[in-house]
Length: 107
Image (cartoon, rainbow, N blue to C red; front, side):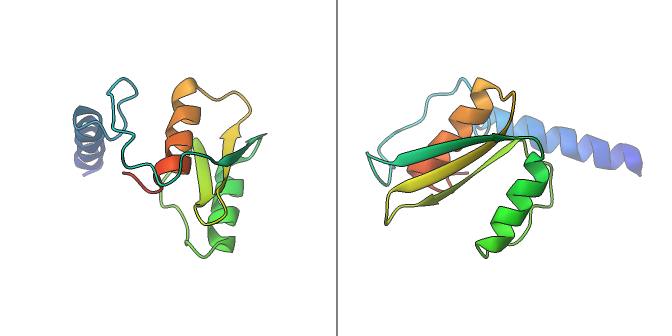
């Protein structure tokens, strides 16, 4: 059973990468940007999972049922976005979250 679960997770990860949902090298359109100008705040933190869970709950979005390496919370009406990452993020972590700042929940 454990092997089937691991195989399922691997296949879903592969599918996400193949379709470009989390492929850091696949180009994407900027036409779906909600705004061109945003005030972006970046907060590198120690407890990324805890902070992202607390912030998500505080904003009424519920919890994550998966591990996160970063998270972003945006408000298109007032053109602000806050990105939380671990203290040593990858370019992919930061870029992924910045895309959320401009395109909302794009995946």
